Length: 311
Image (cartoon, rainbow, N blue to C red; front, top):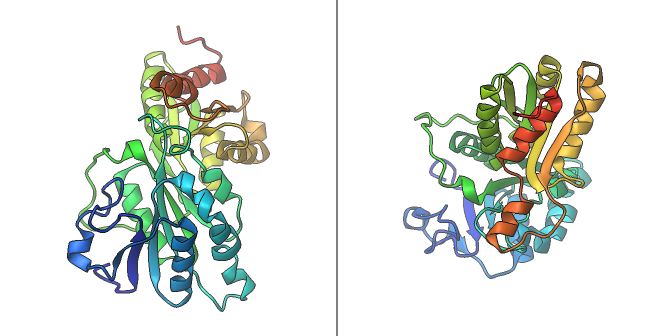
């Protein structure tokens, strides 16, 4: 925003309040109400206004308070933002960034914790990223804002407290470039969002039992770095795919299909998929924990691929 006056923010309670998760705190004081705009409670209106501003040459960053509420703006995202550049033969650009957050682990209930990234990966014309670290969210968000196409940036509620050393100079991260989180030899775990961190926990435990685990974070779901994912599986000959969203029709199904088609002859075991159980997310903490995958679930899948029981 300091470098480009065309960048501005729109969303519910993002100005004085700084957003429901405090992500935009302090920006109103620096940039003023013209560039940090509170909006009415109308997700369709917020995204629609963002699309119009983007097509007029601005670079709006729209915040949807919970990703569950993307359902209210789906017509604007799916039928408008994703289509205009293609239908105009490239004459129109839609440099719209949509930030949203969600996820389980703090008892938000069934209407405030869904993981819907797979819905939007399915739509041609959209780009979708899901960072899991401060460095990645900073670099991917920069790339999203400067992209001439609509980009959805998914953030997980439980990852906001994560801290790490980041470079003093911001380094943009290209879309379609996966990150190897941990090197390993026996099995590849492909994980997104919070499952990256839970997979690291599982890998540490597996190592105590003599199993070397490689972890790859796609970071960018669309475009997808298929080459990096396939290369890792060809190296380890086994694969576990994990995300917090429900397993049925989830993003992991597409990843498993990519591995199946491009690395079948290298697989020494069936591909394992780890995700949430097919049920609305319960409010009660004990039931929520039962539905959502954890590090123990990933560890069990790792052991199944290498033919061990973990004991």
